[in-house]
Image 1 (cartoon, rainbow, N blue to C red):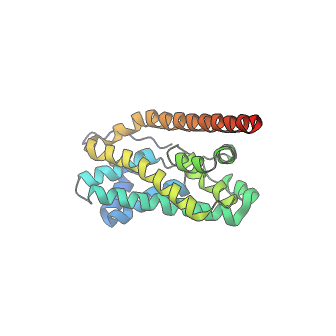
Image 2: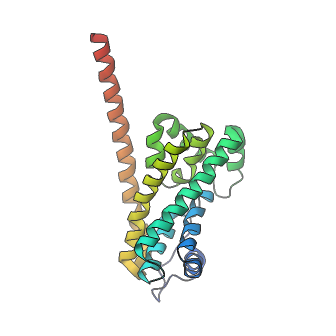
Image 3: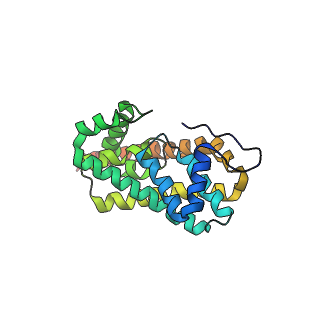
Length: 217
């Protein structure tokens, strides 16, 4: 992960932050879409940093908050679709080989995501948009397994919109203190994982009840 240090002048300068803000100032909403889209194509770029920067840029008047949410979600979805198509065209083994060549990424990251997708399917795509690394990789097994594109697109859009709203909104409200968002990102991520576990548990309970009812009949 990139390390971001709070700037003394209350302006994000240098490194990833400076590049991202500069791109947004130059291209507006399209720049925000590009920055966020790269989170899908290059997983080590943390969305917990770039999304608050979009909110910070909106607070500075580069674009409106609504535009920030729209364009960051567009970037998330487009990036996810590119990864989905890559998984669909390459297949499992060639996808694993490609993942192994990405800097700072391990094949085990893909394997864990693939296992999660196999166990939870649609829920994995929706909630996976809100979990670091999983949000980048979850589109790969969805493509490899050729999940219905319309379903994938809907789940990805909804999950991305929720995640983006939380972090863009936080960056907008914090303004120059946008960097504080990263310190509390883990709380939201744990809440998402807990929701996945509860949803999976409830699904198992329902299925067991159905089986018991069938046996009783």
